[in-house]
Image (cartoon, rainbow over the protein chains, first blue to last red):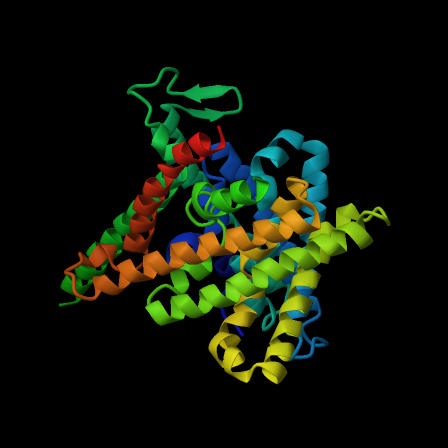
Amino acid sequence: MSNRSLIGEFTKGLIEENATFRMVIGMCPTLAVTTSMVNGFWMGLAVIFVLTFSNVFVSVLRKVTPDEIRIPVFVILIAAPVVIVELVMNAYLPDMYRVLGIFVPLIVVNCIIIARAEAFAYRNSVIRSAFDGLGIGTGFMLDLMLIGAIREFLGTGTVTVGSMVFPPKPLFEPMAVMLTPPGGFVTLGILMAVLNILVQRSASKKAKVEA
Amino acid sequence: MKFISIMLAGVLTSNFIFMQYLGLCAFVGLSEQFETAIGMSGAVIFVMTFASTVAALFEQFILVPFGLEYLRTIAYILVIAAFVQLVEIFLKKTAPSLYKALGIYLPLITTNCAVLGVAMLNVKNDYGVLWGTVNGLAGALGWSLAIVIFAGIRERWKFMNIPAALKGFPLALISTGLMSLAFLGFSGLFKTVLN
């Protein structure tokens, strides 16, 4: 059982237990859909929805789920919200659905969602699980948007949000390689390395203050 | 001709790891040792090939005739999970030595997005049962090629002096990126062969 406050359950997903940079899971969509910030936003929104509902379903049924067959049960409980997202997206956002392609149905096998079901929702109350799902999902969405914004900026020279384009004209020759798979791998690798350096710095500062 | 083009595409030009980002968790997680990588490759080749057959049969004889295409995601994941379980039981009884070699990797494959991904791609490309199976085999071979090469590279890290901030995942991702850049070069070759 977790002893955080409800707000704490939400905010831990943003930094402390961030899916991409701290737990390093669910990497396939992280790299595949982040060719622009808007793609990252919609993919993130889909994951928030699925994660919140799958966490709630798993938590509601946690006392009647036999231990031996819990993984197949989780998979079915996760598949239900994924199908809902798929149908809704196909109906109301057909263009985005086409861009995200098979990665929308593949949310079903995303490690983040199974990991949260197994590690959190199966052991905690319904309300806590809902906040945990919202928090981890929001953290994941912010990761996707950050990576998407960096790749879009370097790859096309601008970042487009709706009808706004920033900066209005590319400031440099766009590097198209950032939009291809190699660019995705390298961007995420360098971001993680930078984060590691920041964490080490703050840790050594803390050590100095204590000494 | 179609056989050659599907095989070439699966292994080189649209390699699952380097070009389509499928099955990355297992790729990074199980590539630290050469033997582990080989074991996982065997299991993936076996499961992915036959899972695409089973999924394509399911599509052709159950989902389409009854108009249930909208349940595809749920149906496929259940079919794959059941298939993996079946393979596990079958191997345990009939080929214990093979089971010992692949056993621990089999449950991991259920949540490997490459297996569900190839089944989805087969539907998207309208491949049917036969070509779907070929595509599954090709994708699995490409995945195995990637993880075996990568495991070879990773084993050498032990003797190198790596900056602390790059250790582990960051360096793994950057080297995957460089390998992916190399595989990008194959796209030209494929066009030449076809024309």
